[in-house]
Length: 388
Image: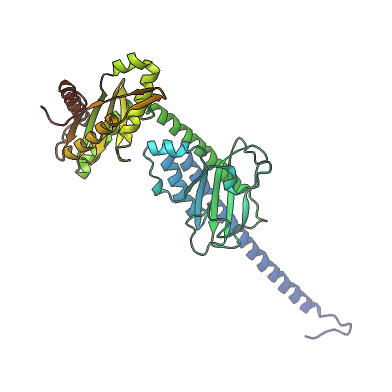
């Protein structure tokens, strides 16, 4: 390039170089603007998806719906390779109630229960649930250290975030996020977004669990801990509809403790309550998890057996009768009581569930009640499954 005697570029060349530099700077700025616009659009898309996710979990009507939504949606919208949820359940209250409400935990392999705060892995200072407030733990995945939080970790998991679930500064569990990208969760990463997400999830979890607890209380007999009539009436209608679709029989037992008034007269109502609790335990021990036991009131219990014909139901009823009569009920070291039950068993066979479910349910209960009456009329402490 030609230079002047002073060593400077000719004016026309200076202008050309300046224009070239300006064009390069403009290209760089346009590229930077395009990148920022792309990031803004991506962030907007992420925020929109998360807002929709928040609305979906807030609207969840029960525990399975909420947990299922978290496991189904969150990995997709957050581009994660693993999402698990750990809940503190010190006395197994959550598991007991959800089991009573027919929650199938096998459907949620990412749902983990622990009994103590320490098992969550956070730095809790004085080991107090209320203070201090722990921060999310972000870093590289360690198979041994994170085995409890990611029991079914996918291959190639590289980085994880354990985010405390807090309600009124109380830890109720942790949201565990995993990625095969080693740079996804690093200790230097800002955590405001995932903490906000965890707070929404924590609120929804606490609300749903509280509602499920209230539902359980409303469907449970407070004395014996088994279901009440309200539950069995509802469940029977559901099972009649299911039996129609899947073509299997259901059976119904009506159980009555023999001479229960004599029990109350002998040992008082407190002792009578202990007898009711023990009889409920002995009945339940003979049932499958798919069956349902309820107290209908007073000394009467009923059992709904799923996919059980009359013969198999009568066999189970005989086991129940033998279990109750087989050993004394111990009320105190010096007071034991012999108790027996009478049982009527009716069955809704395949193909006989036509008509209105409410009418069929009433008829099934009435038939079992009539057979129970036959059992009592014929000496008590017996099972009757057909009219005498």
